[in-house]
Image: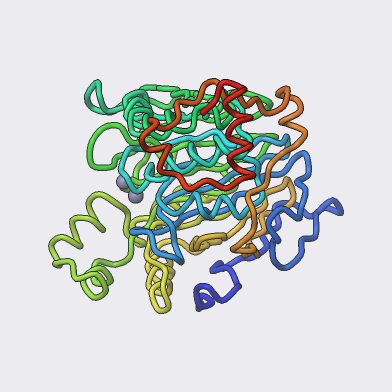
Length: 392
Ligand SMILES: [Zn+2]
Ligand SMILES: [Zn+2]
């Protein structure tokens, strides 16, 4: 079978609609998902690829998947460079997603500062919650990453304190060990289990999310592993990494053959190796991510997968969306408005007692620098008002 061309508006999947059970309840979906335009059923998951590649290019961010749940929750699995810009077009308010990081390669955490920044100014009136595993040493885990991120944002936070609601100026790390499968999240009917995966050194995990009898495994970056196969039995959607054949990196990125084989074959998963995981797992839908998707590259991935697995397979590109219900698994492309504004949530802001701005927390400029600003009458009057409130 031939995949459709990437970025053609047609998702690259062998099975756009997978029927799990024949039922009159089965939803019908528009041919494309318009961001923010569909409500989820109570028993439904919507998974949207925020980033699927490496390195980040306009067409593909680094790793990241948004999972929206029928109970109103949202989760972001990995926060690679470029994923934040995708998230900002999807009309999901900033207060919702909790973050689950699979490992600390920078292509999986590079946009954490962006999510932190734009959450502060767009209605996240509470700390950002970030879950992540232990690493090999005491300073390689989610707590040390968050501490470093807070230090990274020190000047930023200082300069903005008093302008914005201070409740958004925090990140809450949730740390767990990476040596065995364990339940790390259990709220509102959603459970998330982490499990170890082999990826270079100790400290990489995959995640399984279960909700209302529906399930997703996001294995993160990994070599093919029996641990993933165990955790992904009976799963609706298995998102597994997949690197292009080494020759792709030699031809398009100028890597040496040795370098390309080390990366594509020994730290990661080739399409032929992913096929073994898929065949041993038999997920409702197997999905590959992390490959370079450009005209001409997807077909070799599908051909590689087909050497050992003949079930439903999709190759993720950014904005590929999968809806999962008890009846079916539907894969589509998403329509977004690239210049759309970030959505806020008035109901949530009201529930949190409104946005609190306290100008007395501002530090302001030293006088010699403030005195160089060119006055505008209306703005000078406002600055005087701010000063009366204790700000500067
Ligand atoms: Zn990666
Ligand atoms: Zn990695």
